[in-house]
Image 1 (cartoon, one colour):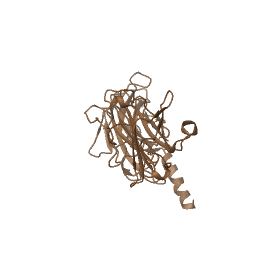
Image 2 (image 1 turned 180 degrees about the vertical axis):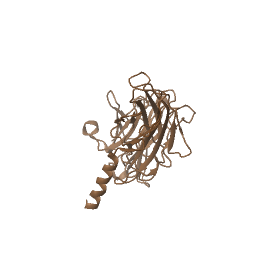
Image 3 (image 1 turned 90 degrees about the vertical axis):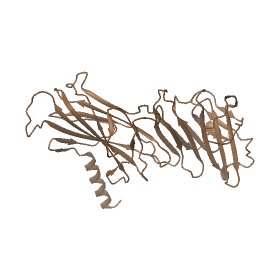
Image 4 (image 1 turned 60 degrees about the horizontal axis):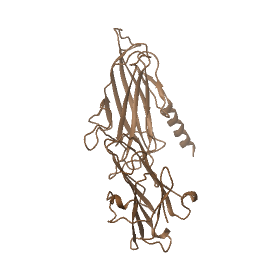
Length: 360
């Protein structure tokens, strides 16, 4: 790193850590979901919770992140007429603060019109800006001294090469009572606080927040071996979490005989004996052992609990995402070797949910 790069990094760190006091406005930048409490006047505390390390979206596949914003009264007087604005920006270079409006999109309802995010917030004409309503806040320490806006669900940014999305919270407050404004203590005061959500564009992993009514497809990069994990959460299922699809070197304790990569799927509480899990994987024939056949391949599945299952049975029908076989066939797999394309494709179904997967 040369002297100019060091200088730029120092400036960036100083700017991110600064707390600026100008004309009754106070601002700052959060770290690790910390609560920031401002002092004096009509001060508030602001806390932003987020879901780090989710994946960016693409033009054809949506992933999601969840935020929550808590505003707490930090004074002995009631605060009225709160005006809350949320602004999202994207960061593309580690040395440059986020300056571009985010392409993340607020999800108010699911495809069936069921509410997903807090009704108190709504998108403005600028799609990266939300305005939120809030009740008056009682004095600090009372039962009504805070409000939490949650969940705030967003489709993640689909901008190319995006590294992170920052949420900036601006709060304008007015103190209750009949105080007279003065130049040093204006009737309205404004406070700002920000939190950055990292977006992980990994080749061998994808992650997304999922929620009731969500339909998400996690897919690793189509280079070498790649996998697809479709997830649909029934609207009435009370499950909300970060779902994951990850590939890596097979563990000898899991499957010493397996070839290719070990696949881990996580979507706890979604799949069951009545909600069948599906996984697809495409493996280059160059890493498939000679003698492997469509009828002879075995899928090793280690569920989250219990003993592993070796799936040898073949499902009827062609490999089509979402084409779940009859219950009497489960667990089973569809296997196709395409010598012209140089690929082995496996689509497997199980009643036993998430876990580890491998082939031998």
